[in-house]
Length: 139
Length: 100
Image (cartoon, rainbow over all chains, first blue to last red; front, side, top):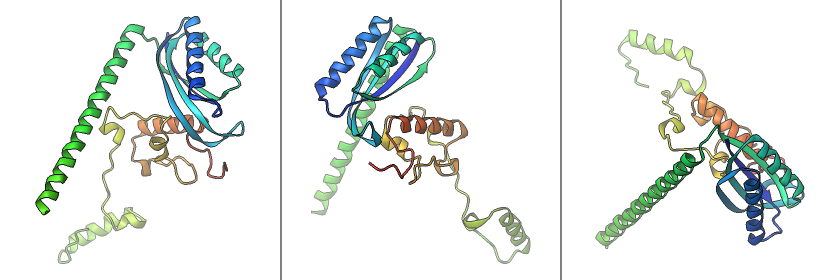
C-alpha cells in the first residue's frame, strides 16, 4: 500500500455543496477499490494562474489516501469522466505505509500544528499587551 | 572591508583575494547563506500554497537559481519539484505572458 495525495480543481460554477458531494463521491470510489482515506481538504475557491477550460477560478480539493497503484488508475479514470473536474494531479507521498501507524502520525502532526498555532497566538497577544503598556507609559 | 593602509603585506593579501572575486562581490563581504529548509526541519514546502512557492520564481515565472534562494542542493531539488507541480495545478503560471 502506498500513500497518495490527489489535488483536483472543480468547476467554479458549482457551489460548496457540490464540492462536498464530489468529495463524498470520490471518497466512496476510493473505499470501493480497497483504499483508505486519511484526510480530505476543501481548499476553497481560488483564482487560477492561467485559464483551464475557459475558467479563471476553481475549487481546490485535496485527498490523502492510501491504496494500490491500480486504485490510482481508477480514481484518475473517475476524474476524466467527471466533466466538472478541470485538472487533477496525483503524487505519491510514501511507499508501503501501515494504515494504523500513519493515522496516528497524522493525528500527532495535527496536534503539533495546533500547539504551535496556539503558542504563536499567545505570543502575539503578549506582544500586543506589551505595546499597550508602552502606550500607557507614553500617555 | 577592513584595509590597513600602513602594512604593505596586508594590502597585497587583500589584492590577491579581490582578484578571485568579480563584480559587486568585490566590494562586499560574502554573506553566509543558510538553507532555511535545513535550519527548520518542520518547514515543509507545499506546492498547493501559492505564497510559499511564489517566492522561488522570478517575475517572468522562471525558477530562481540557488544563489538567490539560498537553498542547499537537496532542497533546491525539492523547490524545483514543487514549482513544477504547482504549475500543473495553475497555482503559479508557466510564463508571465499567459493572460487571463
